Length: 311
Image (cartoon, rainbow, N blue to C red; front, side, top):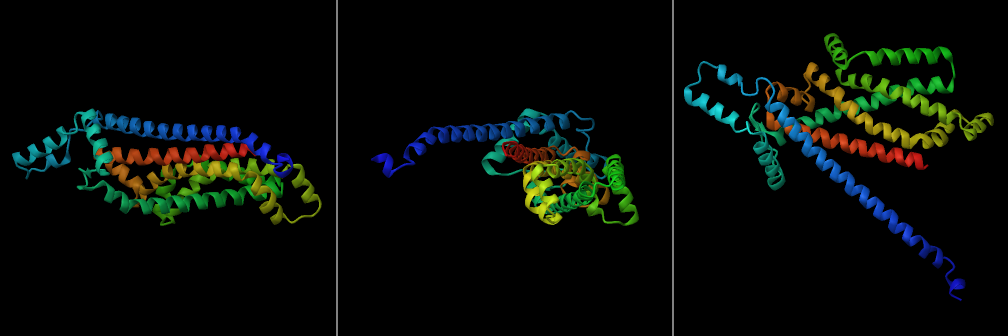
């Protein structure tokens, strides 16, 4: 009688243990990711502090070269540096200040709060990265799609040659060249991302267009745009999302020399100034930001790749 009234009850009860097991597994994965992120941030910040502390010239301050300084001012500068000589004590105080007061501290070289520097410079770097990622992907698709759809050896060779040329050009050299001729320096990150995305995108599209159902659709005369939007792109979307996560890290790495050489006030230029000034608090804070961004992008990439393998 119960089976007649509730035919799906047994099947629902049977799936409950499986659902609980899946939830436990997801919970363990999330906890593992968070723990890995926290441990990586702590170790990365500590390693940065150690490297900066024992780097040549850490105890040298260019302000001491000013002949107008009196003995009290010189003593004040020496005390300022001596406070950061013990790396473990400095790092412990820095973590305590961040955890209890949500305060990143001040930059000794720029004499400004680090949080304020981040607020001013993040929009510049985000804009530069967004333009680079969008432009790099657009250029990669513009090269990959015709070479796959047209199957022309000439176009395939031209695209491969252009890809190899961009791969051989360092970001710093392109930044100097474009800046010298007065070109669009904000588009330079796109030229760095394009060759690193192009080959992977082309291979994905070739595999997708070789699928039997897509070959059948093309044989029946279905439009190229409809095949691309309804069949090809949905099938490769997880892999493209995984590649997109990696592109964010590539864009940030390319933004550093572009900002430094083209005088763009972003996080990359801030990191360069902090490194040249041996600004320990600022370098540690930038390390935290870079590690968090990289780990989050890698997590998104791994998740997208896992979903793609399941599909």
